Image: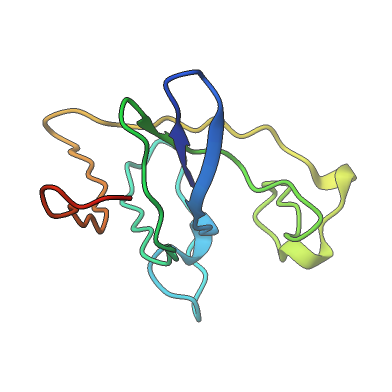
Length: 120
């Protein structure tokens, strides 16, 4: 999961990120596979923030996607030990995000407001 500042002109800046492997959503010690069709809660609470002034007119973008980089083991979604899986084990996965009154979502950000009249 990534949080970006999208500036008024359209450029973006990565503010922070956090990653969570679905099988470790409840415990980092005991993997629990996700059952197809099950609605699960995922808490991302490992964000690191550095002080940054968000420009007037900017918006925040929350981006959610699979981890597929040289820094993470690729998950081929076969349900086995990730480190032992390869492309021959690969299965397609479909992820559905819920964000409605029955499944509310929230992003909590530390925000400090500059005092009135302060120069920056």
